[in-house]
Image (tube, rainbow, N blue to C red):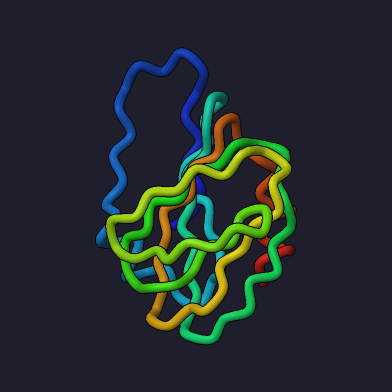
Length: 124
């Protein structure tokens, strides 16, 4: 699924089937699927034992864990996360997922959008 771009001022809703997106995710670590001027949405996936090497981003970020278990480390503080967990990560805060113990699928929201190339390169 390609990134969807909504036009500024477009009042039509853009509907995305998250179940379909999860099934089609493949082996991508991060895939952005929506970008508008105010925010972007993407899907982060990591198998058990994954080493998350992402670098801090220039934008605020929200993680919504859809599946799996891991520990999220933000600025040296660690917290377990699993399906249903929601985490806010401030812009420029060092963060990563560690101790991924079950296949992890995370909805990622940047506001405003981050440079997706940086995220994709850093997390693969």
